[in-house]
Amino acid sequence: MYKKLLILSVVALFLSCKGNSQKTKEATKKQTLAKVEKTDAEWKKELTPLQYNVLRKAGTERAFSSELLNIKEKGIYSCAACNTPLFKSEHKFKSGTGWPSFDRPIKGNVAFDVDYKIGYKRTEEHCAVCGGHLGHVFNDGPKTTGERHCINGAALKFTPTK
Figure 1 (cartoon, rainbow, N blue to C red):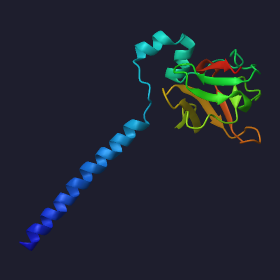
Figure 2 (figure 1 turned 180 degrees about the horizontal axis):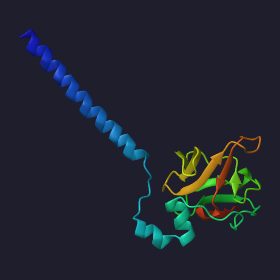
Figure 3 (figure 1 turned 90 degrees about the horizontal axis):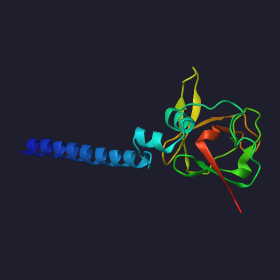
Figure 4 (figure 1 turned 90 degrees about the vertical axis):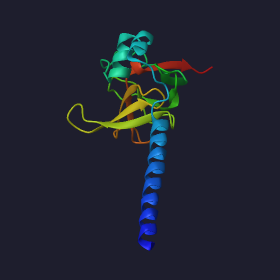
């Protein structure tokens, strides 16, 4: 009798732990995924071909081609796909690389991942809300943070502050 009770207890504990922890992990995983989800056709319809290539296909615009590169006004740089505020103008700096560069993002609005697309490890940046590709972050930035967030202008839209 004691052995049967012990076996049943162990089996019950095993099954209940597995079921609850798996559900919790799945629920947490789903909550951390992109909050804006659209079909590929919907993104193509809403974005310009360049924006679509950069934001949805992790492409890169040509260096020095962005209209946002030389903006010096105060304002907010937001995701061109979902309007999430990503960078503040006071954190923008001239890096000489040909892409808008910032020393820090707006906390919580940018997500990071690793990519090896060109043969070595780089930190890739995405909009935390829609998952759109923004660019990459490097450790050769100004003394303020040491970071250079090298962002495709096509992934951004600028709104001046009044």
